[in-house]
Length: 295
Image (cartoon, rainbow, N blue to C red; front, side, top):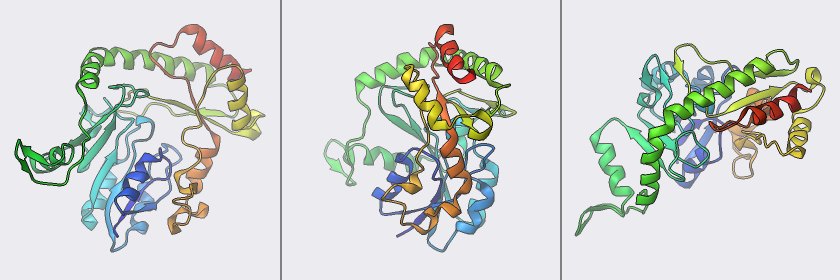
């Protein structure tokens, strides 16, 4: 079977998609400054069986798409981006979804833009689109012609209608989320043992998540300690992404899954909490969350 180079620091669906298609995932470590796949680690993982690179724009933060594309071109590999978190994200005025050969979007209810459930694929050529259109509709080319063994993965009309309504308010939702992120950053910037990501220069972020990272020694409490304390007060943070995909029973036997191969990913997974983030979060709710962390 073929191999695809990917990241262990993601939601399990990223790797499951490979496994279901008989493809072996090959994990490479992340860049601790972004949480994204480290381009410096990709070349060493390429073998004659490698067919593609599948990075994730983690928390909607853009990968180093230029470096990744250079490596892919050098070795004749495809690049498929898991852009589940990256709706509306732009780099220097251009959509991040233009990068690579294809990008996958999630429209699940937890996302900045959602259709309750569903998603989209973004590609650059008519031929690929046509093939996917067949695959998602039982292989029908017309009323009487079936050209491929497709399945039913069309979006239904009710979710589509919900999505169209959501498009009207997604820009104001992103603007509101940005205000929440600014409040979090202002309040937490002086707290010893708590760090977070700043905005990247030239990037229009969508503020889909607000992860913080706990240094237990400096903070005086472990990440899990804080997580449980928040939960007791009904403030539901999320250890996202923990545990790493590479530690799950399906994948932990892979050579690339060894902890010694993924030190940065393990470190980030062990110290992350995503704080509540939504465009409708009120002052009181934001303050309640901050009080628990600051105190």
